Length: 247
Image 1: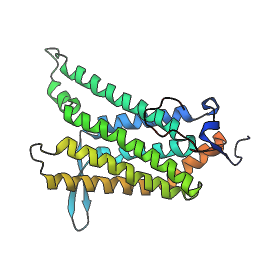
Image 2: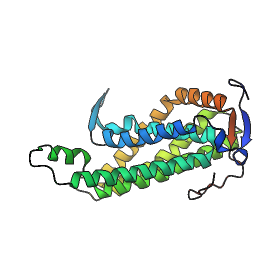
Image 3: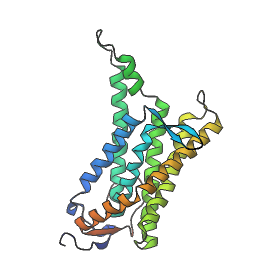
């Protein structure tokens, strides 16, 4: 198929991974954004002015972490659930290795003339409960996001892309938030049940709103990739278990 031609609708079972030109780049972008949003965003609490409310604090990572869900939507929409599944596992492995590396590096005895250990611990120090909550929430949320999008694509016969990108994000980010905030903070010092619920719904609403705002960009990227790859994958007969290894 020539570049720019309309993509051919195919079943995921009939697609050979070797024919993809951009899949590896999309995977790399997904993992990079996931790691950077956790490293650079998770350690800072920022604030924004909301009319009628005043300054409202939020985790800085929320600005970029939802982009991983957008890329997850693009992966499932263009390449199918099975290939998105491989990327989710790659991201999970990368986050686990990042947590291990951060723990090892922080625990290494600093040189006597190096005075930045306290700052380093503040930024990169790992709280096991937070790491566990983050990994579990990401893993479950991303798989729900991909599953819902793939199923909705079959139900809508490929129409109304916006409905499945937003719908899958509502479900995926919902599961992510329902797992992360109670597991990470419920019972922790300074965290009441009411506060956990408030933060949970606030962060979920902000992430979904971010997905809605990025919908035009999602359309552009999906359209570009489908034209260049020359396919439009539908997950007919796909094995939707998260633990399958075959594409």
